Amino acid sequence: MKIPLTLNDILAWLREDNPERLKTLWGWADETRRLNVGDTIHLRGLVEISSHCSRQCGYCGLRVSNNSLSRYRMAPAEIMASARQAVAFGYGTVVLQAGEDFGLTCQWVTDVVRQIKRETPLAVTLSLGERTEAELDAWRKAGADRYLLRFETSDTGLFELIHPSRGSRNASRIPLLRHLKQLGYEVGSGIMVGLPGQTYESVARDIDLFRELDLDMIGIGPFIPHPQTPLGNGELKPFASPDQQVPNSELIVYKAVALTRLVRPDANIPSTTALATINKRNGRELGLQRGANVLMPNLTPVKYRKLYEIYPAKACIEETGSACNGCLQTRINVIGRQIARGPGGRKRRALELEVVC
Ligand code: SAH
Image 1 (tube, helix red, strand yellow):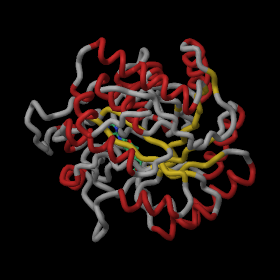
Image 2 (image 1 turned 135 degrees about the horizontal axis):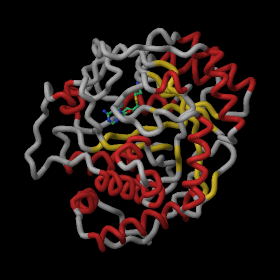
Image 3 (image 1 turned 60 degrees about the vertical axis):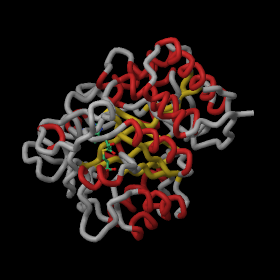
Image 4 (image 1 turned 45 degrees about the horizontal axis):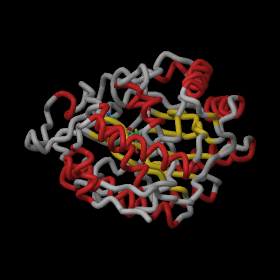
């Protein structure tokens, strides 16, 4: 029998700093991961297909008013070359990510998805921001398998502040996540931790929301300030009192990942690039040992990587897809895990450990 983690338990764990108690949390998360999704690690090849963006997100370096960034949009042939690389490296999935770029028209994306599905065995994940229901429907019908859209924070006031809505659209991404599910996508979401103005309580609610939304994938990374953004340069300063403000530390991300594994035992949870960025030495591995079971090696051509600067000093920015692949294989072997083959969708078994808080 499981004693469910209540919202208050989650909150207490987020505030826990006793290393011995935290070891218990890491152990529970690792065992829950092993029981539900096994020891294999799924590799999803990430292709950052466009850095154009029409939005004004306070946290993201791709925001339209960042004039210091030169923008690119990959040609379909370049995307296909990256997809073939994913196949050659044995990855089961390719993730096409971009800013909210309306140069990526409905037909353009449809054609790219169709070509990948026709010419490769890959699962296709799209992460193209808030697009219309008609577009999402068309891409699903073209064969896209999954969609990633982080809700970033469940604190609606904070989200509206850092993610100005477009026209009359609802600022919250949650209704769109539910719609994606209805269209038959496997749906991924997630959050940044350590946003200015973000409280421990709100992160606890985010984790509780992961439990409520039937998410297949959940990505959690630290907020990394970007100097060309209002949140990074201090122009925008959402306030939380110092005892409530959640830090953007490595430790808090591990806690959030571990708790997410406990509340969503069978989800696919990546050890994120943002985590690897704040601990380049072994952040990825620690994430994998504290609940995560997915890595997203970068397959974006090197000439574009530096230009997809959502935050500064991103891990692996100078590496080729091949170097990234080799490096990840070694890191996975060192921690005694294996690389999974095939697309690796969610299994839905949800075996829960008996945890006593
Ligand atoms: N346009 C797409 C993809 C955005 S980039 C979308 O909006 O969904 C993917 C993720 O990077 C975002 O969802 C956000 O969680 C993360 N991100 C953006 N800026 C960041 C920053 N400064 N620090 C850490 N993560 C960031």
